[in-house]
Length: 58
Image (tube, rainbow, N blue to C red):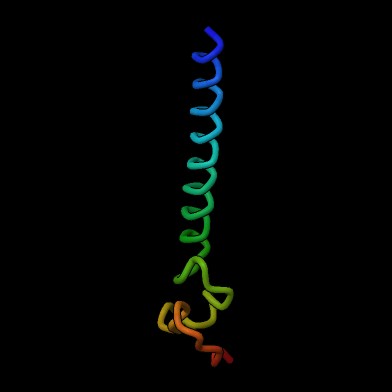
C-alpha cells in the first residue's frame, strides 16, 4: 500500500512539473517571444542564432 501512495505522489509531482513547463511555453509564445530560451527574444525576431555564441543583439 505504501508503494502505491509513493507512486501516486511521484506521478503527481512529475505532472505538475510538465504542466508548469507547458504553461510557461504557451505564455511565452503568447507574449510574442520568438526564441523562448533567448534573453533577447523580443529584439532579435527569431533569427539571432541564440544557440551559437553570437552576442550582436544590439
